Length: 246
Image 1 (tube, rainbow, N blue to C red):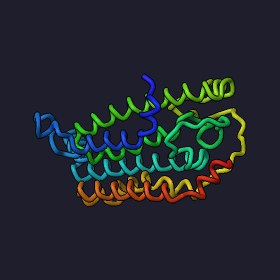
Image 2: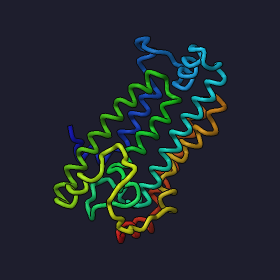
Image 3: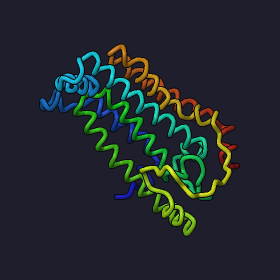
Image 4: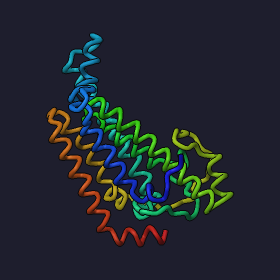
């Protein structure tokens, strides 16, 4: 059930393929399963059918919900990356040092995976409904495998301190209160925001471009933010040195 080292190395590419499959949803034309209607439109239509809201009002509610999910993913990703460091977050290999128990890591062990799940959930609003379902199921399974793989690696590398941390902090459901002492780890907010351009782009797309009801425009905006994030991550050597030193 645990992800292999190869899966971890290519995790960004695998997640990209899962999301692309959700947008493409080839089974709609091939087998007639589902309709080429976005989850956003489908949810608005179903809410309007209940009689609670008119379709236009229901659409606004769904757009705002998607934007809020995207905002949450952006906040969690930036917060987590600020403390763990862009170099560690974007590294192709698992890294083990001291136990990170600062920032969001005092409340949940895997804030970055939680943020990734929320970001993809926001993107699912502009997928066909069946594509969104398939993508989120596949993504959830893959992220769970990554979490289990990292836990095994960190347990082997760090040992007792990490086991104590596992007992004190939940895996994916955050605890609001914690007794863990802060380690006064320095947060790199500027570098984190540059490194997390993708979730920022998803938020802007859901908050701004959703009102155009143009799915192609929204997909292009997300692709642009994803491409920019890859370029910026590749051009951050100074941040990498600072992260390693930290």
